[in-house]
Amino acid sequence: MPYWVAVNVAHRENRSLNGWHTLVLQVAHGTMTFYVDGLRVARLGGRYYPEVPMSINYNVWFSAALGKTTVPRSYAEDVDWVYHAAGAVLSPAQVSAAVRSLRHDGVSFRDTVPASGLASPCNL
Image (cartoon, rainbow, N blue to C red; front, side, top):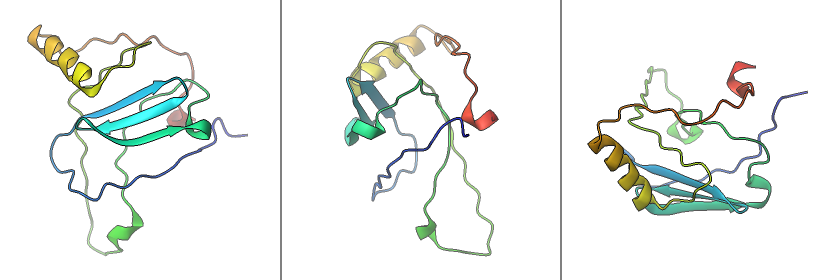
C-alpha cells in the first residue's frame, strides 16, 4: 500500500515566469491559498486540504504542451529562501517584511521547523 495517495489539481499561469518570484502558501482553516508575487492565483479546500503533515519538495513541472523534440532540454530552479511561520497566516507583504528583517540582521540560515520523524515520499 502506498505511503500517500496523490490528490491534486493543476493551475496554469499564461504569462512568463522568468526571473525571481515569490510564492506564498497559506494553509489554515480548511483552505490553502497560493500567491505568486503578491497576487492570489489559487484557493483550494475540501478534498485538496492536507490531511497529514506537509513537506516542501522542489520540482520543476512542465506540461506535455511543450511538444516533443529530439533536442535535449535542461531546466534549472533556484531557491533563494524559504520562510515558514508555524501557526500563523501571513500575507505576502508580511512574509516579505520578515525575510527583509532576517536579511538585515545578517541571518543566512535558521531552521526552526521541528523534525516530523516521518519518511519523505521521495525516499520511499
